[in-house]
Image 1: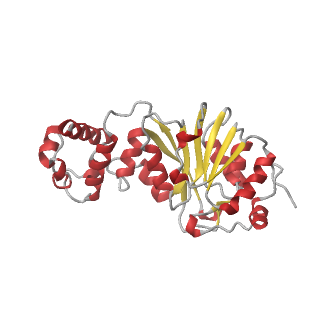
Image 2: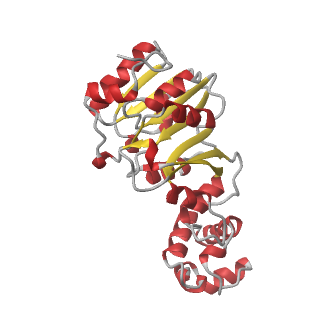
Image 3: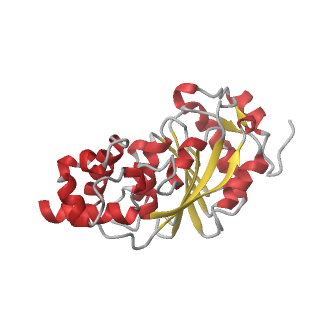
Length: 281
C-alpha cells in the first residue's frame, strides 16, 4: 500500500479498507485532496498551542491536516460508527494528540471538554446540520465564547447568508446573528469535484472570529425580532413587527416604518431589541 505525505495511507484506500461510503442521510461528502485539507487547516491560523474541535471528520482527511499543521490536540466528534476505526488509525500515528468522541455534535456542547488554552473549531460540516451548529455556537452565553475562531465549510448559499450585508439579497437572520457577534468572511470556494461523492453545489470556507464586545442587546429579543422581520421580509416593518409595537416602536427608534427588514443595519436591529427589552422588562 502506498502512503501519503504524513506516512498514513491515501484516503481512498482508507475509505475502501474500512467500508466508509459517504451517506446522504448523514450529509457526508468526503474531501480526499490532502492539499486542500491542508489549506483549510491553515486558514484557521496558527494551530500551535491550540486545541482544535473538528465536527464530522469522516475518514480523517481534515483531521490529518490539522495534526500535520501542528495542532497540540484535536478533538474529533463523529456520529458515524464506521469512521471510528479509521480515526483510531490516525490516533495511533499521532500518540496522545487525537481524541475521538463518538456522538452527535448537535447535543455536545463545546464548553464541556474543559479546554483551558486556545480553542479553535475547524470542520467540513455535514450539510444537513451545518447551519444549526453555527447558530448554536453563535448563541452561546455568556459571551465571549470558549472558542477563538470558527473555520467552517458550508454550501456557498449558506456562506453568502452568513457574511451578507444590509441591502444584499442574502441578508437575513443568520447575517444579523453572525455579524452581531463575529467578524466573518468567506476565505475561498471549493469545487464540487473536490468531494466524494461530488455535491450538486459549490462550497465555501468561512472564517469567523468572535467580537469580544458585541453591541449590547438581548440575544433572545434579537432572535425574535429578526424572526418576525425576515419572516415577512416583503412587508414593511410597520406590519412585520406589529406584535412588537409596529410603527410606534419604529418611530421611537427613529426608523422609518416604511422600510423593510433587509435595509436595517445590525446596529438598528440591536437598538430595536433594547427598546423592546426595556418595554417588556
